[in-house]
Image 1 (cartoon, rainbow, N blue to C red):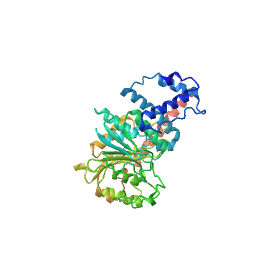
Image 2 (cartoon, rainbow, N blue to C red; image 1 turned 90 degrees about the vertical axis):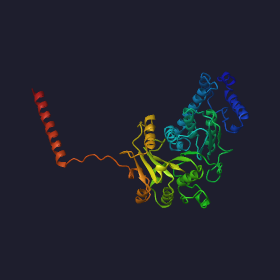
Image 3 (cartoon, one colour; image 1 turned 30 degrees about the horizontal axis):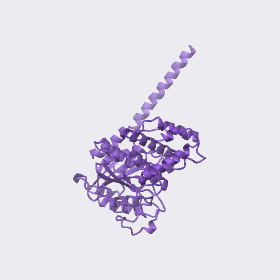
Image 4 (cartoon, one colour; image 1 turned 120 degrees about the vertical axis):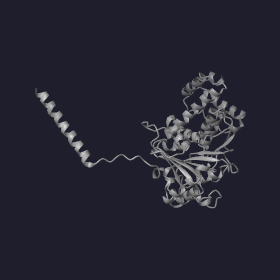
Length: 403
């Protein structure tokens, strides 16, 4: 009420800054997290007052509906920042439709530990909490662990969790996961992540003998398999499972990556490989994929990998494609059915993968429908007939005009 009454005064910026300090004092987990630059002379106080009015006119009571409204507002703002930033926006925001797909497939349960070692603004946790809440649980019945190296993004994630009412452990500060793992002893039930694609200069030369590289030392110029192995190391030994979004290059590139990929296949950790369509990420046409990895596969999945080609399962938009609810349901059903489906999925044995030199691209295994190849003479005859029909119609039209 104090902020609302000062909305259209020159002091509104100072009033909000003081409010931020008061919130931090009462909520120690938010210490030094909230922005306190609203009194800046560069900020238009008229616009700031109008923003305050928007929130004043909302019903912002302490209810689940109000938390969700504020949370969706915050997520919308983050999404718009990501659109504005283009490719860089992917560093702190994974499109919600991709996150929903991963959560729908992994199906986190109540009282589980969910971990994201490169959590951005925390979207994986929001969708996990929503999933549990939608399946007769409460959003608080989830233990959240995350880490983020960028200071501003770390603050965004902390605010996102606070607004959603999710108790999260993001460590006392931002930190590099490879060099300062803040959750070193954690064994998570679910790991969901969208690491920065093809991260170079990640410090391989200083981490060559790291215990996390059980399946091979990742290349110096690319951290993709460093992220994957870090997550496997952080996964619980029982029913732990993970989904990690990656560029499709990890499925077929050679040298060090090929050797690590071989070891992962031979260890029978990979349950499924899913490729997605293009233009799903902001500012790039790159087509991603994700790996689903389990410590303990179901008995009939042992020694096999489900290959899913989801490249055509999307809803096309002018600037950016999206996975609508029906697209997510389709991808989930392909995973859940665990069967061969022409054009979309196929169960592949480890021997078949060995025969293809450990290439994990689904399009190397899925059986595609082939259009019937018609005889050349038959097609040519149809073309000639069509040409004659056109000439006949032209003559008839010419006679009609002259008449």
